[in-house]
Image 1 (cartoon, rainbow, N blue to C red):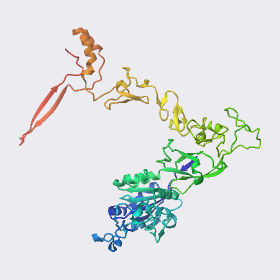
Image 2 (cartoon, one colour):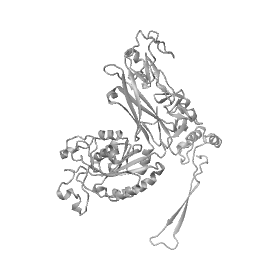
Image 3 (cartoon, rainbow, N blue to C red):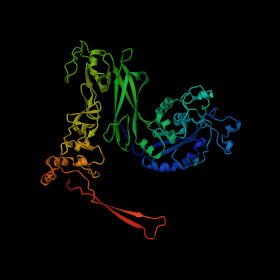
Length: 563
């Protein structure tokens, strides 16, 4: 279990990487006032905000730019406007807490121009990530945000072949005098390569794009693509997420799962919790399972790195896997109780520590530690000791069950109790006792509470959901969908009364009997008189318009039927 606490006033570094192609003129003008405004908005989240700035267009080679001599230095010469030359990436301002300096440099920025629609945004992002400390001035202890602003999609790996550039990007920093010198000699990075570098350097990426480009960037970063900035930066700063990586030599032999327990007691989907406030703690239950042994069958030491995304901090978990394990005649096991395997035949053997992962070489014995259809021993939350699961210990609560599949902390809570106290938590889902259902076992299975007085379920007008009536028609309401203020009477409403009259003849006495015994009808109140005022005007209205009052009498609802 790894605990991550959201500290109050944690330092934040935000680097603006801005597309300065000609179509971005309006956005660039807006950015000239955003520095001070953003710093004021951010004070409630961090009093230690630093900003940096860089610009990009595209690779300064054909066919991305016009290479006519008159266009290289001024891409906007046709419009009699002085533009700056196209560039792959220029670092303009290192991280600073001086908002006046940020604003001053932004106001000095001028647009540039290029030929094709996609820009070199991903190429520039990689440089902003890998040149972080030496040149850009990212602070080691800060939460790092890299904000890309553009109105166009970006070139991807292999696009550079259009310009005859076939050398893959090496993923290194190539800034000299704040200018990206490798732009014309190396390919655009792949999305995977860029993602690795951002993660390696603890940087959150945010894409601030125009609406027509939203879907293009959403494919790369579905949770961090925005058309506005302020609110979503706040959302990102309140998100706590971890990444878990097994060292390369053993990554295929281990399974890793992450189960966050958020401050409100809920279990999140994925590996993060949102809306985490300062001084709140998120617990990440990290489960590591051993899928197979090394080919040589020897014991192995493996390192697993756990990092809170966006923070320059980490936790190292060291695992010792013990593959050669004999549960044969020399080691006897008792039946399923609290006892452990007998060590009488091997008195020098010591009990294994809890952090060891055991892969039993005896296939028949090991299979007893897995439920049908699973290839992971003890649900990844314990070790298989002679065909019996020994569950891990967790600070969050107890882990138990034949396959360590049960616990008392990873399911939804109701009334302060896991599964509402009406079930058990199995594989992070509530298995409710008879009579109860729902995510937290808070819904009764019985529909008795939905039976209306006429014996029908929700008066025949709805469904019983979690012990309460949900009306099919929004016009109906009430505990049993018995009310309908907007309904009007119909022939069907009186059909039982009509049947009564027809069955007993038309004598006055028997007709009165029917009127007395007919069931009360669920009808709305309709006024006995409907009054409407109509005003008629001529083409040239007189001094006093003529008004006509029309009264339409209607039969009162309470009157008995007469034949």
